[in-house]
Amino acid sequence: MKILMKFPEFSKETDALLLQEGWVPLKEPRNMATAILTSIPFMIILGIGSFLIISLFAPFSLQEFGVNPVNGNFSFEINLLFLPVAIAVILLHELIHVFFIPGFLHDDHVYFGLTWFGGFAYTGNIISRERFILVAVMPFFFLSVILPAILGLSGALSLPLKLLILLNAMASAVDVLNVVIVLMQVPGNGKLIMNGQLSYYRK
Image 1 (cartoon, helix red, strand yellow):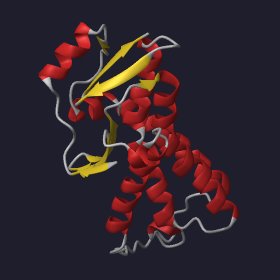
Image 2 (cartoon, one colour):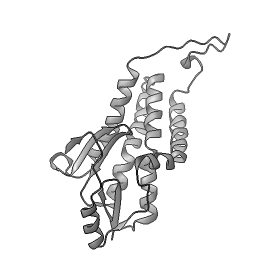
Image 3 (spheres, rainbow, N blue to C red):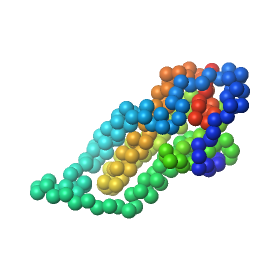
Image 4 (tube, rainbow, N blue to C red):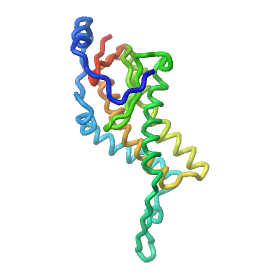
């Protein structure tokens, strides 16, 4: 695994070779900005879902946001640790992706990094449709489903943790968008490979 500070670039030579070998480009957003905009409906759905999961164990309250329900007074505290912890959660999100890529520790074609659009996990290897879906959904499952359940049962769900869990859920929207694209276009026995921002599939 290698650490990068920018997303791997698209290669015209690789594109020509893949097309020659019978790989078919996925119909998908061509850059991260477009992917984020396209995934906004999933962002809303996942955010609501995570909110409901959290509320099963520790419902949100006005007091947590500094509002006194009796007299309506409002107070606000800035937690200086929130931003670095949020970045750590983003990195953990991507590390979970990487963990489910086969052979990631000793593979020079597996990349992990952080950009202005957030973190990323990337493999230049051929990957099965099932493995792609598994890699995509695991950060949401662990950090926005399992984690709030564990913290909620132990009584440790503070407001900052709730917000970080919600942040992870909404950040998983592009992952879910990719899963939907793959489910709609790639056959059950299909395989995928990436070339920069673009993905290709074949049977």
